[in-house]
Picture (tube, one colour):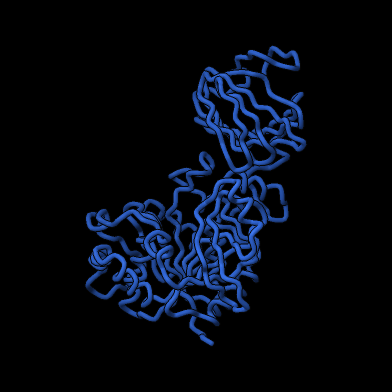
Length: 414
């Protein structure tokens, strides 16, 4: 058994676009104080602060987020090995390959665990147990991923099909891209199928060899970014001109999917990537997690004949509401003069009239309602329909409604 510790690489440069307007370019999802005063990045730092398993982490982020990084390091008291500050986003391959190649100059047998900073893993003990299994059965000439047993037919994650065995680390049979809903329903019925959690473990020497073998041009571009003198500074700013030449490609596409030897360890720690309004809303309903996007007491529910709506938060340019529509109820046929809307289905099946088209929208999917477009939301199902409504425009008052039809006989606001 190996006793070598992992060097964590924490990827913290994403912009969290799927959770706009809660998540913005100025303060993306990983830096939002979603759990009281703590962000997902704070929780990730605390998670890797286990000296039995991990060395000091390397952080990779945008140079625009330096102040947010320093804020979290001060708050958590976690010491880091280094912080790589990218001048622009070039996806996950360069984000983890460059720090590995820099570190390989000092120790080419360093072992890494690469993880996003914006995932939520509430059961830390189980996470440590999974990392210990990987450490104790480490595959020096392979890549090991963490996979999660699916509990629903999610279209938000990629899937991993594994070969059945009694080994602690299972061999990967194939990777499946984020599927459509019908395919996802089939996948979760198949044995030996996991969600891909986007967490990777490997040895530096192994990655060095594979980059050189698979994409020698990219390897040379990355090597050209490595300081010629000894690198001891905490903060590393890659040369902007040289960095701009790197390919924009994910680690999955560049290495993982074409790699001949991939293994998986199953992670049973309540993992979610909180990558959508649906996953965020589901977590909000479980008070034991302490999610603090909004306070129920501060955000009253406005009762309507069809159910209720609740304003979650509002800015100068947007408003976010939750709509709860009872079975066999519907909103009026209407349009808005000053705003457009995006509807994200959280629960139930939404029947949406959009102009002259009628659509069925399932959980995890969304639809855009344009400004001045006739539209209606209906629930023909047997369960409550829940929608996250994101309004954008110049005016968000409830009186910005032109009503065409209404089964409740109303002529005022919806």
